[in-house]
Image (cartoon, rainbow over all chains, first blue to last red):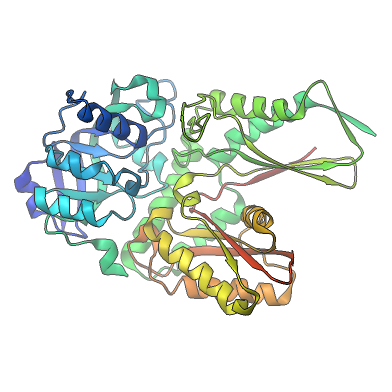
Length: 177
Length: 280
């Protein structure tokens, strides 16, 4: 199936999506990768508030190349999601709506996706120039000192992804192999 | 004796960093075209088409092909009759990387210490391998390496009794474990023989050889072809979503080894297999 959906994505919409669906996302999503996840985890350990409210939001595992003049962002493809597995169940339990990355996830992340009615999407790895065309605005909203690993708020239009793990726990990669 | 001012090396490295991250070499472009023509899986073909579009946009609009513009791996083959003047060669190479990654709007992906992890903010230092060779020329090979695929690479210390079957199983296992994580379709650099570190270096150098070329050793050429065929039967496919294009090439380099060993290194590279060579 093909869907054009708005982000943040409601649980109702997420529950309809199935492994293998082609989805085009329009709206607001946030970037975070290794260093930002580590810092968010440390923030939570201290009992402090996260710099971004994750409730219902989408995290895109991505660290862009610098933007040229007049462009909102540089190359902007997904990074390997499994490096975030250690931190992900906690974020999902706190209300994170969905994730965009590439590659396999751990059994713990699978369980947390099902438990929270979330979805894991993949974008095409290594297609950062093409994907950057769907990003219309980009603004660093936290951890500026982390450079490419800062948390960015992105406005995307028809950002193309595939459903890899749906809210029932079905996994596209496992189906293929 | 030929004198070369190290500023020449700096300027060339800087220019190569920018070029290699925006334009794939002809062998890689051909390999992607060929994969697109041969892919039977419908979704696989769609993804390969998008990878072709991605290359076009990258070149036309000067947006890096992949946001992971890599850690700069540089292989220097320095003629023994060359004398570098005007500074330290290592500093000159790193200055080239700094200049290329800063002026070329490339991502700074290097941290100063593997455990403390502060970004150096200019993508230095590079990983540099030097070889002294006959002559009075300098050959610079630059191969920026992204870590989605680097992280999936493996080194096996096999036993001589494992033989060629052991090598095949090791390579296939590495590809299966990598699956969608390494941004397939991949290119495999395989180093067989030598010592622990020699095998790893051979595998990295194998990735800088043109995709579609083969080893001059008949039994290794045969192994390259057989492994490519077997890898493409795994149905990992473009982006790991199924299809017959899991790898576009298997390049193997070999070296003499010890009577007790059979080291095998598998360096996995994604479809953005960047390599550029220049002789000065």
